[in-house]
Length: 233
Length: 226
Image (cartoon, rainbow over the protein chains, first blue to last red):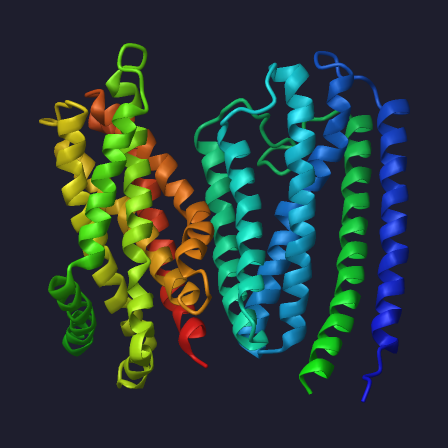
C-alpha cells in the first residue's frame, strides 16, 4: 500500500517557495549593503560581509539552536515523532548556517585582522558548536531504531542548548579580538540607523530562509519516513 | 537519604571491584596518559619553547584524552551478557543508577589523573610546591563536570556500533569550555601568580559542574528507558 504523500508534497512546495524568496532576499540585502548603506569609516568595504555574517550567526544561535532544543524537549515529553523530525531538520539547517558563519568570518578577518583564523574564544566555540551539530547528525546516522534515535538526539541537543550560554559567557569573560555584540547587549544598539536597517533586513531574510529550508527539508523527511515505513512493512 | 547513598555506592562499588579484578581499562588509560606525556615531550623543541609555556596545554590535552579512554568502558562493559538489563531491573531509580555510574567514572578518571600528574611534574621538571593544592582543586572541578556529561553520553554511544569513536566526537565539544578555563587557571598557577587571579575560572568550573550534573541526572532516564 502506498501512503498518501500529497500533504508532504504540499509542504515541500511551500518550503521551496519560501527558500527561493529567502535567496532573493539575500540578493536584496547585498544590494542594500553595497548601494544604500554608508561605508564603515575604518574597515571600508570589508565590513559589508557583516550583513551576511551577523544574520547567519543570529539565526543559528538565537533561532535554529533554541528551536531544535525546544523541539527536542517536547519530543522527550510528548514522544511525538514530528518533534524529533523538526529538531533534526532544524539542526541540519543550523549546521548550514553555522558553516556560513565560519566561512564569512575568515573572509572578513583576513583584511581586517590580517589572518584567516585566530583562536579567539568566540571563533573557537563557534567552531565547536559546528562540531556539536556534526556530532548530533553522526549520532543520528549511527542509530537505526527511530524511537531510540529520537530520544538520544533529543538528549544531545538539550545538552547542546545548555552549552550555548556557557559559550556566550566565555565571550564576555575574556574579550578577545572578536567585536562585541552590538544589538543584543545591555545598552542600546550602537550602530548608525542605515547600518542597523540593513542588518535587521539581513536578519529578517535569514529567518525567512531558515523557515523555508526547514519546511522544505521537513517535507522531504516526511516522504523518506513514509518510504522507510513502507519498506519495513 | 542513607539508603540512596548506599545504592549509589553499591553501583559504583560494583564497577570499581570489576575494574580492580581485571585492571584492563584503568591500566591502559594510565599507560595511555603516560605515553601522551612522553610524545608531547618529543613534540616540542626545548630550545625554542619554554616548558612553562607548553605545560598547561599538555596537562589538559592529556587529561581530556585519557578521560575519554577511561570513560568509554562505563557502559560498554554492561553490554556483555546484557548486564545492563539486569541493572535496569534492579529496584533502583534511574537517577541513582546514573549517580553510581558517575561516581565510578569519576574515581577512574581521578585515578588516571593521579598517575599522570606526578609524571607530568617529572617530565616537565616543574615546581608545584605552591600550586599543588589549587591545581588538584582545578583538576577535581574540571573532571567532575566533563565526567558528568561523559557518563551520560557513554550510556548512549554504547548502543551504537562505533562507540569508541562516537564518544570523543560527541563529548569533546562539551569538554572545551571547562578545558579552556582549566588551562586559563593552570597558566597563572604554574607561573606562581596569586590565587585571587584564578577564582573566576574556578567559579566557572563549579557552575559548569552543577548545571551539567543536574541536567545529566534529569536526562539519564530518557537514555535508558525503553
